[in-house]
Length: 264
Image 1 (cartoon, rainbow, N blue to C red):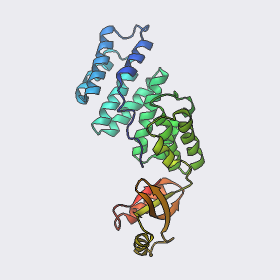
Image 2 (image 1 turned 90 degrees about the vertical axis):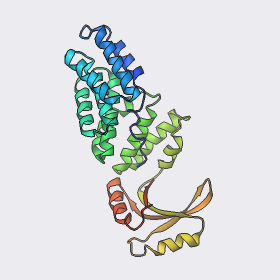
Image 3 (image 1 turned 120 degrees about the horizontal axis):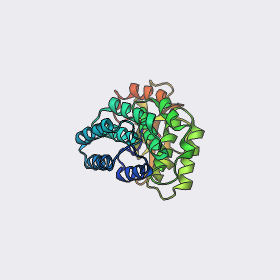
Image 4 (image 1 turned 180 degrees about the vertical axis):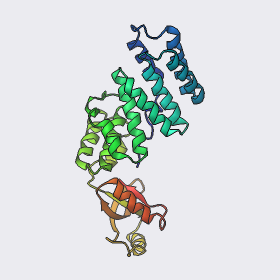
């Protein structure tokens, strides 16, 4: 699925950390030195020095275990683990961060990260639950249109097509200039998944491919689609109500047709 992967883990986090530290400026449970260490760790994350950042953040957590900043330190550790491919440790760090997060914007980012990890693991119901009670309260500003988009994709994955369209329509209304609008429109208005077998410039070529798959039941069908290169004949197979069924079908077709893919 075209999921804007890890969009929030790639967002520069220094502005977020600055906001969080400002919110905590009146609390005496972390020193100015500790705050500078957090900012330094954020610098390392943005520079791609993930192991060094995680080591510094771990020291901050041990030095100020009762601090409200433990949540953002754990969150940044989770980012480091995502970037180094340690998804299990990332999930643990994000979960620990969520347990102690006491600033709404931090909780938003943690939940988005946990939802993303769950989605990438094909745990669509889990991913949806991280969003469900909170999606209506997300800030209506950049980059949160991406959260609405991902939530829409998750709803589609669970077969909730009408509810997904509510999220896509929200993006089109609130973020009419967003650069993901073409992707949003691509996913809007569908009622099922299908397997795309191929695209052709003539009906004859499309029919030739379909004859190679006459053993499939139901048989492949075709639709015309207008692309930047003109009208094309698109061969499709099946109408699957949720992502799991579509992926199962794709697994059976892939050995015969490597370029087959799930649409939308």
